[in-house]
Length: 157
Image (cartoon, one colour):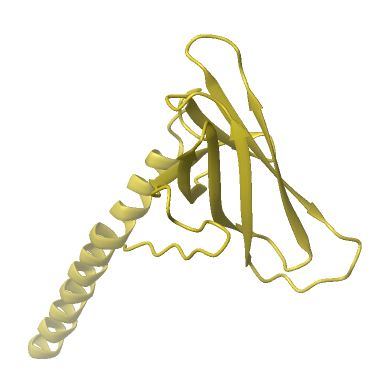
């Protein structure tokens, strides 16, 4: 009877050790991610984790920005407007807006291309918003000879 009790106690000890190890490994990572997601958002940080990557070309006093961004469905239309401030330092804000057509559409994230042009000094600071919320704009310099009507953006990562 003592041999059988020792085997049962040994099995319970092993189960407790495995349970503690699993909690230590997985429970700890979940609590760390919860703390990270609860950090306050400052004005400088985008409220959306969205990053819009685009090509940027400056030619003859005109900024040309062309790229693509993900929209919620193929039925969403992506539009953009640019406003340039007269304050110093000069800033341009590209306001991206998505609107859904009245059609019934599958919920499939779709890439939508855009191209916008505006006149501003070469050293203007360019920001972006997505449906009113600030987003990060990643501009890749393009040479004056590049054709931004027909482009591809390849992002490593």
